Image (cartoon, rainbow, N blue to C red; front, side, top):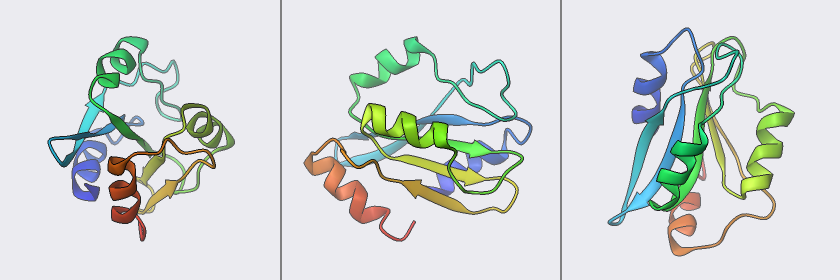
Length: 122
């Protein structure tokens, strides 16, 4: 999963990459979405259309990259993670590190339990 995220992010070094991690047929799938932010170098936004299409696929987490900053989450990242009750993962193109933010009121499921174990030392 880390490698898949790195490949997506390294292929888009000038803008924040973003997407979803879903759980399908007992596998975690990393899928890129188009960043529709007006300022894609320092922010990301996933379209409503992409959100709706991925809701059917059991969203487990949101991932994105940081182009000009490290692997620390912004207050906005934390706020959105809390609102949608799924973890946020970040990969920093600046320091080549990953990080995970787990919301306080996470959506519970067997798939989420597996995911949390998988990213324990993320």
